[in-house]
Length: 169
Length: 169
DNA sequence: AGTGAAACACGACTAGA
DNA sequence: TCTAGTCGTGTTTCACT
Image 1 (tube, rainbow over the protein chains, first blue to last red):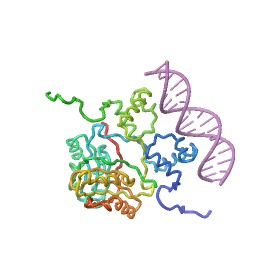
Image 2 (tube, rainbow over the protein chains, first blue to last red):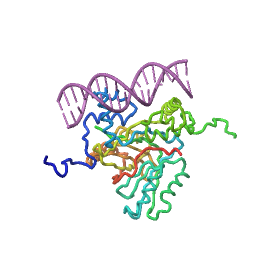
Image 3 (cartoon, chains in turn brown, purple, orange, blue):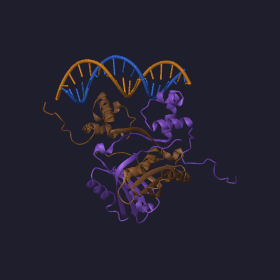
Image 4 (cartoon, rainbow over the protein chains, first blue to last red):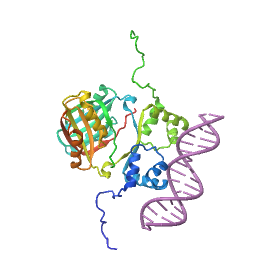
């Protein structure tokens, strides 16, 4: 056959599996509640249970489903504080930020971290039990790093919404 | 001493259930991966399977476990953009912000929203397929609201970390 | 806490598009 | 050839003692 070097498969790196309406319907259910039985999902999306199982498996293996987790109430676990931290660095070069990024990844109190455009370079979401603990965390993260120019903290007064759900129109 | 009008019961409103080390160990597992079988959890925390089951149920019912969900890869689902939005309002009074809050809650593209201290009043995390769609979203959220003074958008260049995990030291 | 019964998930197989 | 459906088995979970 005629294809001797590469496939015509286009869009992205890890082989695009093409999600159809069934997959999306399944994902919509699972990202809301992943405890619902496959049989029930099957009835909801009009498919047989094993078919649903196969699709879920595929979605897991292909990485569309990144994790299946329980979401806990931080304040009920002694961590009532959520802090938003804008970090400014002197030099955004990967080699100069490697240490910072490593510490951020290693710090469990950091829930989220994005490199962003605009004034600040990074935005973190941090949970803490007390302000004193938050100071310890920032000391660990930014303390001895002379590439960190400054960081600005906002305290979350109220959480209106907190999730990772993706719209699946 | 001398405070004779309230009970010594401290932390919060909905009856503090006191989580022991077993509960925390179970939660630590579930917030990492809630597909592990109860039997395996039982072995890991040195408890019987029915005991684990009972504890999980309690944690669910009491709201410590707020949700059990699949986390999806937004970029694999056609939403490669994450935006951070700082919203400034004229008046923070609940009555003046009620509409805004309602629209935020109703908008699936808004993953997270916190009321915060500092310069801005709200910080949102929004996902979008394209910048054009993001503009539509902001139009819906802020468009006709004369209490919204301004909003400042940062585009997420890279996601180093994204989760809702709570440290359970 | 341990045992039982029911439900569920998972694998091999068959059939159809 | 790939994908859905049916059946059978093992495991998990839930209710009961």
